[in-house]
Length: 218
Image 1 (cartoon, rainbow, N blue to C red):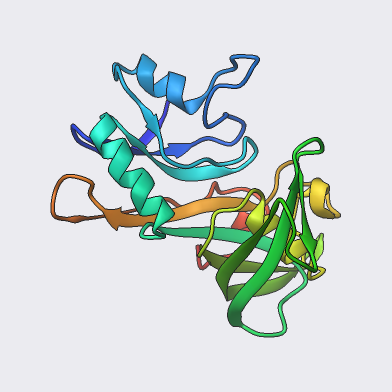
Image 2: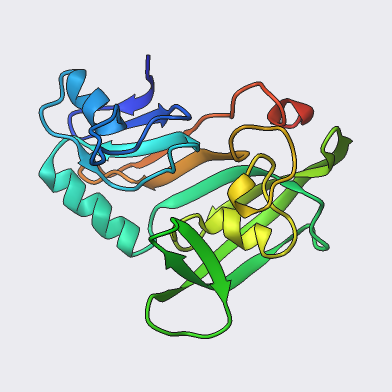
């Protein structure tokens, strides 16, 4: 059962469960687009994606007009995307901006920080804020809030991992613990409604499991 946060005749904001694809792949597995169409929506426009093993808030369009306007807002960086993440160790600064050049290796489905611009390399930027830090069974872990300035593949995961702060549970990028999935959650979206003259601001906390339940501030 999907958790709907906002819906009208133009858009749907809901929570993607961990383990569900954002859209169909070549195996035609269960995905958010097909689930929403199965709920009685003849058209569902995908505006942005979350990795299969990352959950949280997403927005979908119910009309082609809404899809075009929301996609333009994404390109113009007019949609506020905030994530919560639990990382190993703690940043030296309690807040800051991380900027990197990222290269995505599609064959390996992995992104790397590189030192110079070349074909396939894109700039990535996010700002973060430390919310809490504590000792745990996985050592020092820190809860951070990240606001994306760009939307690159695995951006939050690789930008922190490249600074020796991999996400808890993120084996692909150096997580060293027994957690199954990366501790990354799409926490909040805020944007101008594509048709109505109003702001849509939706949020949802992560599940009450480790490592999220180590932090009372969530």
